[in-house]
Image (tube, rainbow, N blue to C red; front, top):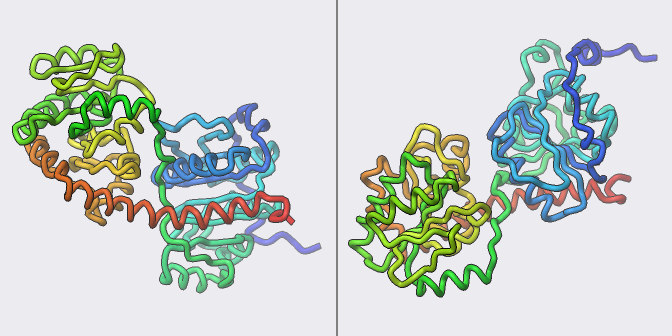
Length: 401
């Protein structure tokens, strides 16, 4: 019998008691796809990817793991999200005693050697994505040839460009296992809306120009109302849809707005009239409706230290021109992608919000921003489609053989 390699010795020596796993893990439907990230940005990207995956193939099970999970994960019927560090083999082993994934997709800055080894020992196909180079954790780097040994069990590495491909080839990954796919999009599934509601509200507003303040925290309410006063001087028929970050603030916000503007409150079914200037949208689950009605939007929270509570990709995917401040929070990756394409308008402070909204509302400006944003989303969609198709092939009976 071949003696265990130094890699196997290290793999079996690392022991860490795992946390109790939820009973629902064993009830995930098959085929099952395991998605793992090793940092928050990748976890957000895979969370959005899993929503698209669930919509594309509603019968599959999805396990999403990461040391840190996004705080605002949507509820999906066949998805379980677990905090998991891949630095030790035991948590992965415990999970694999309960489930049998058809394939695993890993997005990591540092290759999770123990997780990859746990998967490949069970002949589970492993795909790598968003890993710029084959970098190992410090405890593995002292082992000569460990990278090549580990990567021999990886089925596919998805890279963004030719330079990345060369790095993986140098590490001994065969050329046929390296697929150039571009940058995976973290865009969530396009938010839905009730089309009858959209038509009814559009008619109620008499097809007036609307702008939206989405996910607005209390500390920025005064800035948005001041911006609306300024924008009304340029277009007196303009109306603002104000969607507070905390829907419970609806009645109080309505009273505050009514001191300056003709105001209606969504939760009370206040009628929209030709005189309505502010519509307080204090209901959950209707952002898809507001983005579709508005020509432009300000993303709340971007003028404060914490950043926004909403991804800019939501608005970009529905053709809404975006105005935002300098604080991106956990959505910095999405903002950077859109800003590189000049698909958003950034302001330095609250005093610039009114003029920025007026500019974004101009038809030619709104159309240009929407087009540029769609190009960003389309580019990411190409990579998403390539990777998703490869995953789904491995979940089919033919793909397993």
